Image (cartoon, rainbow, N blue to C red; front, side, top):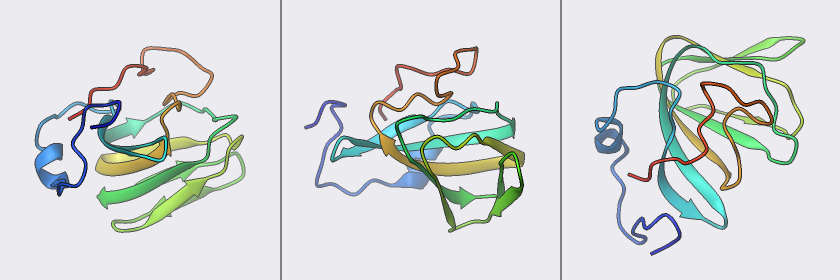
Length: 127
């Protein structure tokens, strides 16, 4: 077992894990490796502009279409595509319809970066 008390060396059914919750912008931890969390989330609507000064962030779109707005352009990420956001890059995730995503990021990453508001999640549930 690791710090999140999730079992290692067992298959993780992502679809089954996604069926355990319906809320948006509240990532759950499904695995941990090399001080990185593997997280899944459902998102819908617009998040806030934010950045992570010390961590890169990777989004894998499992279902739906995700847009990531940057100050100079917006990228569209489709199912089975990833985007890597370099540390220090201001961005805003946008999901016009519900999107299921997987995130790979350091365990220390806070979803809203240095900003703290009602969307901030510091103590994530491990499922």
